[in-house]
Length: 435
View 1: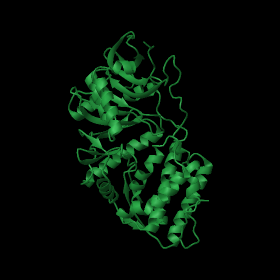
View 2: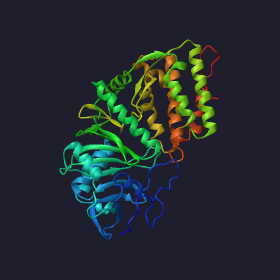
View 3: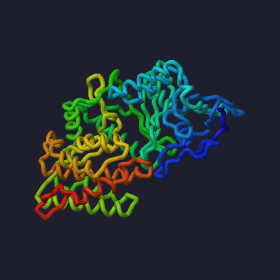
View 4: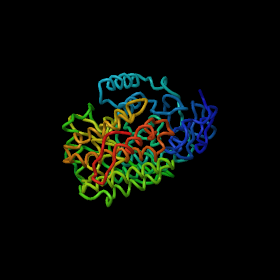
């Protein structure tokens, strides 16, 4: 169905209301915002092929599943739609591989136009409308077509652009930071790729940074793709070795109270919107730091990927491949990646979200999870509490609860645990009895 020409700055789907119907916190959910970020004026768009007066057709894509809830923008050409989907669809489990195969097979047969809405991009005759395509094409030395992945509404949602060659291979991957949060994440990822590129990791394959800089009011980072014919969950020995190598970037031992980690976490907590969350997080952090140091404990600090999951780190053709370095940080307690990986099933995988029992269970298993990093039992317990405070602060500061992410409601699962499972009698001896 044809739609009227759109002013990219409006942020609405004409005749359908505002697409950003998932609440605040600045998540990118509106189709007009996506188009304006990637194809800025003078490009405009319509839903359908009706040509506006004085305009030429720039590109045709398919919005899936629909314009009010854009998750992906695929090229209409079958081979490119299939290639874009294959590159962006997780395949690390048998169920996901079957799903991906069914979808890419359908797209290869030309199903894309029947699975979404037709999006036409227009520009005035004589106007340059291919700036993003030109930039990415120059970086990879080929003529390219764009596809865009958005995924479900989250506070950290951002356009991820795949640059596709005519043969259907992914030549580059670009991310656009379009809100305060996502601009910060894109800048962090660019810095992380620069640092990792100088480190020469042996057990982990990482993207190479191709370009970073401003793109209009957005921040853009462009990187090489990680290509594998088969992606699987990383076997535990390889996963632990890869985590250990990342953790070893910049190792130091010091008191928590003088660490950059605690100073940074305090700063991030003070940026949390809710006053009660700020007060409770700061009090719990002070209690853990004082209790650990009262026992005379130092702590080993290193680096972490920041979001080590089965969809961000895979075994591709026998090699550990890791992307999405936007949460990378140094000077964190050793083994944070192992704790984060262990927590993912309940943080993300459970629709109802985590419970206090899940947080207690993570603390109880911390010594085993962190033993491969050389962390003793006392430091492991402190690290588990600090991890919960770190990830809870992340979710609260990002506004994840407002976007409907269950783990964002930290008062339901994390705060009651960190406030009650670490009690110090100035000997530093904690207890794992909540309440």
